[in-house]
Structures are given as structure tokens and as C-alpha cells.
Length: 114
Image (cartoon, rainbow, N blue to C red; front, side, top):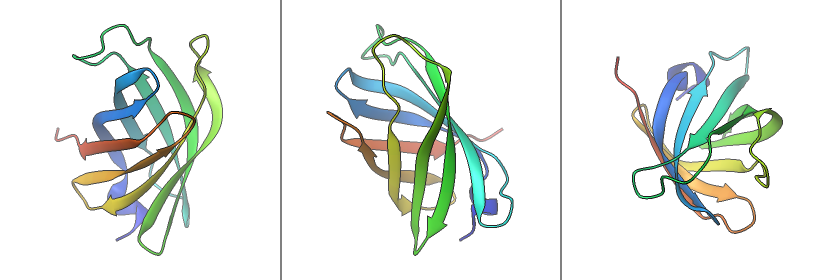
């Protein structure tokens, strides 16, 4: 699979210290072997108090592992930190793996249709 196949909008959730948090990942079409993405987070149905925020990320895909690396804040809520993602389940319709940040565990997103 290539980064080009993964470009698009993905929605789901991730878990960190604040609890389950809504997540939208928007992966831009790649330039060569590198792509950019936006990590957009906010309230979820089970955790409506989470503020909205977003940051830019770099995306790499090597040996069937998709990595998202924090770059810079776009909108930063007070007391929040950026995180990295490592997707070990990578398909054209679902990405899942771990969130690397203090108090964080996992994330899962599915491709938006539309």
C-alpha cells in the first residue's frame, strides 16, 4: 500500500489522560515518500468536555507501519500537548495503533466516505 492510497479524511477516536476524544485525521496527497496531515481533536459523545484543537503532522510509511509525527500547533487548547501516532493496522478503510504521549494508549479511525 502507498501513502497516495491513504490520502483523505479519517474519523474515529483516541484515548489519552482526558479520556476518549474524537479524532479526525486529514492526510494530504504525498510528495514522494512523505505526506502531511492534520490531527484535529475535540469532544466525543462520551466525553463532551474536551476542547477542540489541531496540529500539523508529518506522515511516513515504512515496512507496513504508518507513523504520524507532530510538527506544529494550529489551534492549541491550554494544557494540551501534541502526540505522535503509530498505526500498525493499516488498510484502505481503517487505521489503528498506539498514541505515543504521556497517559495515552490507542487510536482507531476509519475512512470517511463522501
